[in-house]
Length: 111
Image (cartoon, rainbow, N blue to C red):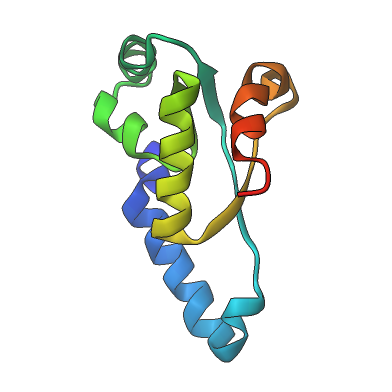
């Protein structure tokens, strides 16, 4: 369900991991599998179209850590913000998205 893919839901899940891990939390590398990936210059239009098809508000898609939709520079900023916000150290994209996502990976390599 898309509601379980919200930032608030992810923050709650990470809080549980942090609580259970205790002092070992800093040894844990957090990652996330993004299911909604679209590297496009029309991020807003793509999010609105997807949201309409899913019957949800486009803001929920934009906010979801499981979605990366927009131009490379926006996705780079989004990933950096999510790293700070959630401690996510790497992101997994599907095989169909590897080529289009390559500029984002190149820009973030080593950071």
